[in-house]
Length: 384
Image (cartoon, rainbow, N blue to C red; front, side, top):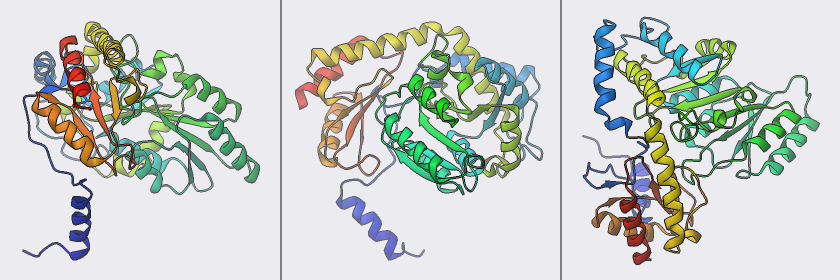
């Protein structure tokens, strides 16, 4: 077998020298402070059993979609699940994609047109940025959660372009995946409304976390009618796989016709779509788990203060809590020590985050106990 080309081998070697080489971790039995399974749905036997029953009842005992949705893959569970999701999120329409990555790449590569502008938060997820790179629109980042900087850019481009033919898309996330913080969405809506900009938001880490039924931050604030598109993914709070783009019926029709990551891929299997639908139904009945997660988030923030760790952490009221510990070697060492004490806490290294912003990323869950939270933070304080 041919060896790796030298140029690729050199890139791998450079990662090794920077102490930043990624490797697939092995499964472990450590206390979970690493997964995105905020409500424990991924491990829920009740959801697993209900999904199987739903498939049998609806005579959907097949293993695959058999093709793209535009050919043979649009099985009966798709439209019923999309209607349910649209109603749950108070949206005119919902279009399922195979993953959050596919949804973001499909949307941003297809919707903004040549002559349009995309203004995106500088900390937006890689899937958003990859989609933007495939777009024919011009794209510029604004400072993180800084809407004065955003408005400066809007005014700049409105003054330089024909406003009648140019659309400005403003893109952010309701919970940022590495910092866990949230933008001031009321202020963002005011800025966008003032300048007739189209708001697009990724709610991947808000589903199951914010709202009485885990609807997400936008609905929790009652702002859903102000957003052109909401992109919601299911691999976090919903504990399964896939994503949905929420918006108008016309937007769904446009994506079916022009989003290449939707058109040219095999659809999700009936089992995957059924799991999504059953997990959404569980949000309606699992208010206790959502409440427990909120209690754990509050308790974690209190314990940060008790152990004098607050200055290390990015301010967050979400399930993602990040302690900044600069240096790949340094943060990997502390993560390893926490793992040796029984806690699955992962280091986030550069280049995933900028050099100097390396961190320990704690993910909180409804099933974490207060004792576990206290112990892991005590261990962290003793290692610093």
